[in-house]
Image (cartoon, rainbow, N blue to C red; front, side, top):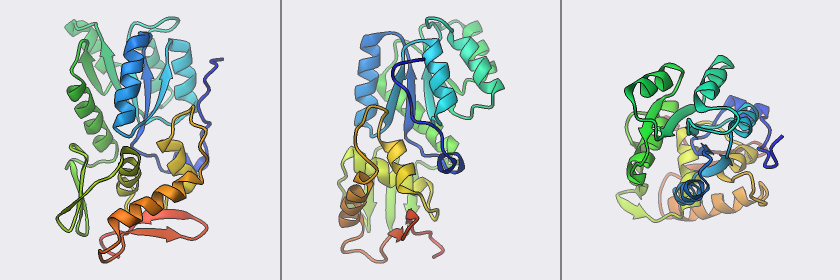
Length: 244
């Protein structure tokens, strides 16, 4: 069993999944470090698997939104993983990232259940754009700009405006706001938020969610009407629905 164990699934996570949890499956250590840094800067929670067995264990144990999957892996290759995961009903969007650029490999990877295919070397901008597109597809959102009352969230540029005014957010604040926006009108618990905003090595507790909710309210709600970020006592938080 791998030393780095992911969090276990729970009933709350099964009911509603976020848009920010990513598993990087790659055995090239320098590339793993570079991807971890870039994805973390984008506000994603990032887990890592460096061989096929570890990746298989983590995907079966945790709900990921996107998996970045290399094909040439120790122990179990990417093609076999794709076949196993789709057979088991894994719903995560899988972006194959590989040096294998032959058309036969692309066709096989997509036919086995891959959602997208990116050949190495690639530009980070293109990788992030493809990840954002997969996230929107997961939540059945085609427009990259989410609108809630007079709040606008540009998921492509990570620009937030309210009443036409640009709101400057930290990556963690932005990730939390996007999480709430993708579940607009639905209550999300502190545990659900925490598990999707913090990676497997983070030692913070779910209490930190309350702190970031307070930061968001100061920036998103203060001076505007109506308040958008709501609390359901004993349940969690939600963004006000447009019909409320």
